[in-house]
Amino acid sequence: MLPNLKVQEMVQSFSVKSNDYMYVIYVSTMIRSILSLHDLINNKIHMKEMEDESIKKEKEKDDERREKAMEMAKKKAEEKKAEEEAAEKK
Image (cartoon, rainbow, N blue to C red; front, side, top):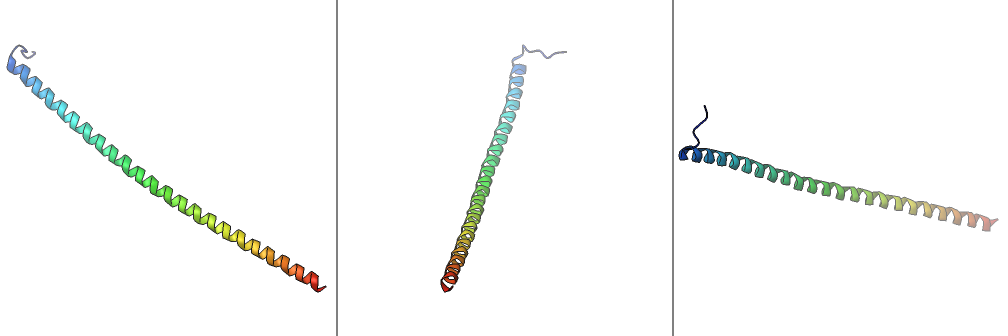
């Protein structure tokens, strides 16, 4: 019950059908690849934005720490100066 493969029309018909299937597989694979690359690019952009935000927040925290340290140093200097003045008055 197999087709007669010695007829040229039958061979050509199978070839055309096979080529059509391969074309569909090729196109679908290309589309999948393009979509995957698009997702990778979007992910890279998103991660870069998150990294920039993280660096900005960390820089702000460092600035706050420096300001607090400077305030503490000023307070200590003022306290020391007040102690020295009190010692001079005695």
